[in-house]
Each structure stands twice: as C-alpha cells, then as structure tokens.
Length: 323
Image (tube, rainbow, N blue to C red; front, side, top):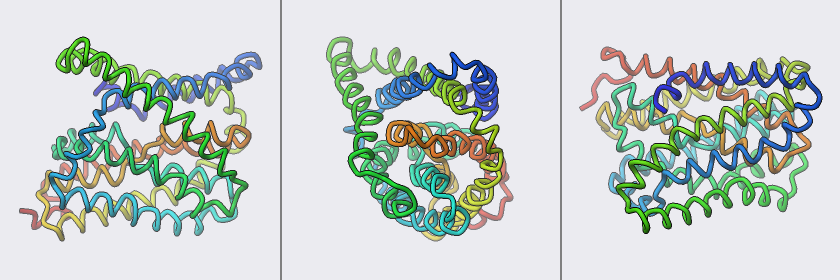
C-alpha cells in the first residue's frame, strides 16, 4: 500500500480519466451512480478496521503535541476555512459547502506515508489518528452549518442521515468484525493478515469509487472546468498558511524536528474520502459538492509531495533552532 499511496496523485488522475471516458456511455453513467456509496462504505469499513478505537487514550500521552494538533485542526483551521471560503467562494454555495467539507476534516491515512517519507515521527502522528477520526465525525455537521449552512439548503435530518449511512454503519461493522476476528484468531494474526489486506484494499476501493464518481458526473466537470481554477487559490492558500502556522507553533512549543514534521502533516493533509462519502449520501442532487471533494486530492497530493521535499531539506529555515 505504501507504493500506492506514494503515487496516489498520479493514480487518481488515471482513475479520473477512466471514469470520464466510460461515463460517456449512457448505460455506464446511469448505473455508476448507484455504485459510488457502496464503494466508499467498503473503503471506510477497511479504514476503520485498522484503527483500534480504544487506542484513542494513547494520543494523550504526548499532551503538548496532541493539544496543539487538536487546536490547529479543530479551532484554527475552521476559522481559516471560514475566511477563505467566504472570500473566494462566498457567491458559489455548492463549491463553498464542498470546500468546507474537504478542508475541516484531518486526514486519517496517507498523511502517515508523507510523514515517513520526510523522516518524521510516524508513531506520534499515528497516535492522534483515532482522536482526529472521532472529532471530525462529531464536528463536521456543525462546521457545515456554521460556515456554509446559510449559503445552501441543508436539512439537519439529511445531514445526520448521511453521516449515519456513510460513516456510523461502516464504523460499527468494523468494530464488531474486528472484535470477532481477534477473539477467534488472536490480535497478532489479525494485525499480520487482516490489517495488511485492509490497508491494501482501502486504496483499491477508493480508486473504484473515484471511477464511479467521474463516470456518473464526469460530464459536469467537462461542462464546469472552471471549478478546478476556482478551488486552486483557496486550497493552496490553506496549505501555505497552515504550513507556516504549524512550523511556527512547533518551533514555539519546542517540538523536535521529527515531531514537528508529524504536526505539519496531521494539520495539512485532508480526509477527502470521508467527506466524499458524507457528501454523496447527504447531497445526492448536488453533484458539484461531491465534485469539489474529488478535485481536492488532485491539488492536495502534489502539494504534500512538494512539502515533503521542502521539509527534507536539512537547511530549511522552517527548522532552524529546533532541539
């Protein structure tokens, strides 16, 4: 799975091209709409399967790192997204909602790959993963209402139903399945076999979902090429600002270079698969919202690759003065 994640940006582009191509056939376009949500639910089930939620307590062992990451991800970032969203997308309600859903959800998977590539503290970054997951599940509906709720017609029941369908069901099933297998086969066997396969297949199902998404809505993107350009400035602004904020804060609280790299990636990388699953379930009649969440990684992953190269530079000014 590591190699898949390393080249995920190129793979996504390929999946997008395949989806748009096969979406030109009406029969495929019609049926692909019904395959997006099942693919995302299977993918999220595989993601949740790898996360022992009881380990959420471990994330508090490094209080300085944990509290800093939480404050940046769940207090500072929503404020920043509110400003950027209103500034650049205030007159585009669907794009604003998609932008909010994309940018307020911290990543729960490939940020660890970039942390490892950049020689950061992967274990520390992984420790906060369960906490990031739980908080974003709880807070995402609140952020959508507070930041973009007045710009588009959002029903509370529809949003909650979307969260339950796309997230709670896969999460509950994963917890139950994990417990059954560990009780029967043992934790070691589970981690060496099931977890490894789940890690591999989550990427496959994400790519399948992307194909179905673009097969069903690819014509919309062709008819609205400006969406990518409209998202470019606010998304890039987020990454630039949060990279500077994360690096400054890491230096201010005297994190080591390795720990600061982990902080940077957990506050930069975004969780588009989870947001996409909620968007598809909540806004089935507004494809532009889901389209934003597909386009997001096309910008994000190349940026994270560039950031990893910057942070690998030992002479980088961002890390002068670290202990």
